[in-house]
Length: 241
Image: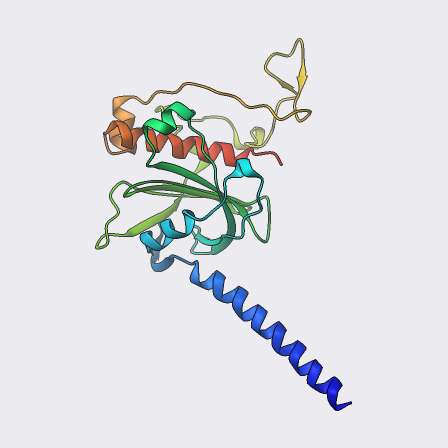
């Protein structure tokens, strides 16, 4: 009986140590500290170096390796969500080779795998999004520094969504669903049924000078980083497992 009690105590102690280790790792991977919350969203102070250090260790999606890198990402309401992150390039290989400092990452929700987060980093530039059931949050900065590392996490109203080309979406919310796929991919005749096969599209895109100046930092590399952030966000929303 005495031996059974000792073994039981050892077992309970092991569970406590394992749980402490797991929660400790999650806590240590929170790079965000809330500063202020107002009508525009929530301001967070970001430990940028810590975030980049963790992202440097995440696996590539193409390798099919499960990620053990769990990051805390905040939303515009101040809520923090846990995501498993992967490195996921959305640029053409030639373009990625030309701009090696532009790196994109995608996060899959730990508690809800349908949740998505994206992070794009280029030196001191960061662009990100968080998509959960309660809505989508965004953040971006084109000049993070140690003495200026506060970011606004904000929510865009999809009723008057600015698509970046100065085109305003005027579709009635009740008749439009961002996840509503057509029955056929490409043309209706012949019909290639959606969902039967994973289809990859490659497309060319350009940014006008006015958009680059207003939404990015006016530079070629900054504009490209902004575009990668936009593509990464759309790619994460419609990713199919």
